[in-house]
Structures are given as C-alpha cells and as structure tokens.
Length: 279
Image (cartoon, rainbow, N blue to C red; front, top):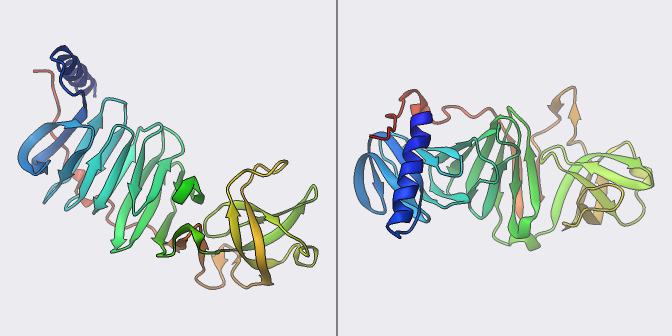
C-alpha cells in the first residue's frame, strides 16, 4: 500500500509539472482491460471521466483521494474524482469518504471510511446494493433517501419509469412519540414522520401507508416525512425476525425489495492484482 501511495504522489506531481490534466489515480489488473476504448495491460493512469471496461479479470482502482474500488469482470464504468458511474456489471467500494457508486440514477455511498459495499446490476433495470462491512445509504432523484443498508444485508432496487412523482408506499409498525407519528419502513430501513390526521387508531399496529415523500427533516424528529394519502392495516411486518410475506415498497419512484445474501461478490477477488511501485 505504501508503494501505491508513493506511485500516486509521483504521478500527480509529474502531471502538474507538465501542466497536463491531473490524473485521479490508477487502474491495476492481472491482465488486460480497456481504458477509453484502448486495450492496456497491467496498469494505466485514470483521469476524470475515464471509461474502463473489464473482461475476464477484475480491475482495482486506486484513487488519489483515498478511495479504493474494484470493478468486477465483464463490467463497465466511468470513473470520476467523486464518484464511479457503473454502467454494467459490478463494483465494490471501500476506504472511501465522500465517494459513491452511481447506477440507474441511484447513488450508493458507504456511511464511513471503514464501510465496504457492492453494487451489482441484477437485471436490465435493477441493481442490488449489498453492505459487506459497515452500513450504506442509497439516494434517489433530487437527493431523496430511499434506503439504508445495514451491514450484512442487501436490497434490490428498481427505478420506476414514472420517477420520483410516483406515490411512495411504505409499511411498518406505527408508533407515537412526543406528539409525532413515526413509521419505520421494514424494507428500506428508513424512519418517516407521518403528516396528516387520523393516525391514532393505528398506533402499535402494522400498517401500509401511501403518500408523497417530503425530504426536509421534520423538527423534533430529524426524519424525512411522508404526507399520507392512504393508511391501512397490513400483514407485511416482521414477526420473530421473518416477514409474513415477501414485501416490496416504493420510495421516491424506486421499487425496493429485500434481497438474500449476495453470492459470488467479485468472484475474482482471490486473484491479487499486481503491486504498483515507484520504479
């Protein structure tokens, strides 16, 4: 790791000295990959907006800002200074503070520099976000928080054609606290303040709520709000650690479902990438 840092320092200093567009890091692989439609082997310099495409082997991306990513086999992404835009395949991110992976208009970000998460295309218009170490959050259109992903869990996310204007649908056990009505959605793991009236008869019950998300945190609760259109009792809540049925919710125009443990995450991870030296 020390040799990687030294290499990046020398590389960045050289680029600055010659007035070139500054590089943002390196791509390293045990084999060949494509960078901006040109085939390279071993390692290559990354610039803001570089397009990287892998084939039979994965590639490690080591950025000057400290972010570490791995792009899986048969994957494609645009690499930026502050984010990776995944267009195909799978990517893992770690050691990243303020860095995120974007896919299908969604932004997945680790909650801390110690977190590790994986984003995978699990269908033509569906991704899976898995938190391997630490937790992660997923943001949708206009910065709407659509999900929190605790360590060891995964969610399937499918943006809907209608986008953020689609009424949101959440479910959980309704509780009352300091005059506010709070609903912790069991799937997205996000707590909402309910705005409206007539909630008292549902306190302590499992309910399903539809309405429009309001992103501003509510005074006294610190949670986003949902302005309720409908509320009804539901059987979609957890009991003894398991769901009564397989629930799916829609938040900010994104359909979300609980996923099982991600299998085969970056299957080539055992193939160590070549080290980078300053030589």
